[in-house]
Image 1 (tube, one colour):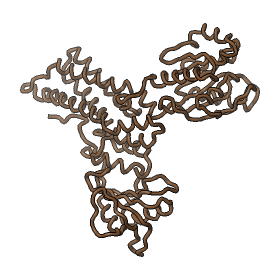
Image 2 (cartoon, helix red, strand yellow):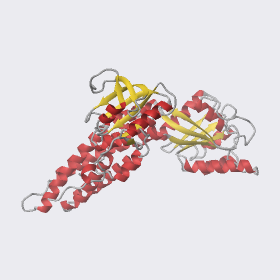
Image 3 (cartoon, one colour):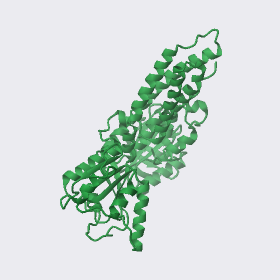
Image 4 (cartoon, one colour):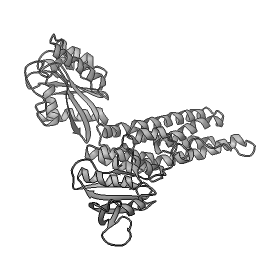
Length: 478
């Protein structure tokens, strides 16, 4: 019988080499602090502990219990620091190997001296993310959990940290391993029939159809929340544009609740892009206030306008601010045309001063649209209720507006979304094959592709190159 595609583990496939040496790194951020941690992982971790640490009292190391002593240079006998040491034996440590942590005083010089001693004792300096990579290779976590570790470290809001913590629990990996195992079983049945048609009956088509249907429903549920989860993880690039004096800087300041940008009645005050970060419903937005969009002979202002146009092309969400107190002019109409087609919120500002422009905007269907890719807000950005409506529109267009719950936080990066999208496409092709009553062996390719795609997320069918890309984004020491 042929082997089923996509069923090998990284170690079995030979793509991920075993971890034979011992690594070490400073696991705490650089700078002055009360404590710094030097982390060691590998087969020589205990030997390095014995040669580099002298406990105050005799006795062995109980797993997970801190012991006080001194980090020493065995050649000179000099004490490098008064420290604490702890041993986490394999296989129940973070990496699945023997792990030792030396908790020393937090000065950068002390931590560097202790790390140097550990390296002299036989460890090598860990690469970025190598501790977590070893945890994956040694089966302590799947690849989706490993990525969640990086997300948790990089989280900028409580909401994104909570979502990363949920992914770290392994819910996504468990769900995909269930789907993968079920497809493998069906594929084995198909291939057994293809190889031994006289001895093994063909699988029941209705059972295959039910299996594929259930898998598609579960995949759709995972992918439906991926946009929200990705926004929570990566944030959203949001640009504020519009003609001069429309109130762009005032809106930026209102969203930030700070006087970040200069507000003036003089056209052309903002000549370059002003950037800052703000959290809306737990999602981080990179807000950029740009130069007013207009035709100008001022060389410096023209450069700012050009940069504003470039920012519009790169933005994931555009907030177009227009002065609604006066009739629309050429600059306003050009700005509407320039931002048309992008995910856009049109803010008709200065409603406290008049509504001539508001009446015109409401007569332009594209400007006043309120749908999945556009929103319209009228009022004054100096009023809290208007700013609240802008925030609600950002949430609706950016990630659907609803609170991001546990299911929506599971699939959170482009790599995972791409793999599961390919799995869905393969299963949809299989569904069409079953519905057309075509030969059952035609399902093998589609089932195998879906199995491999599931394995890309959890790590069963991942390559060393993919791992390198994932863990290179981690900090050293994690």
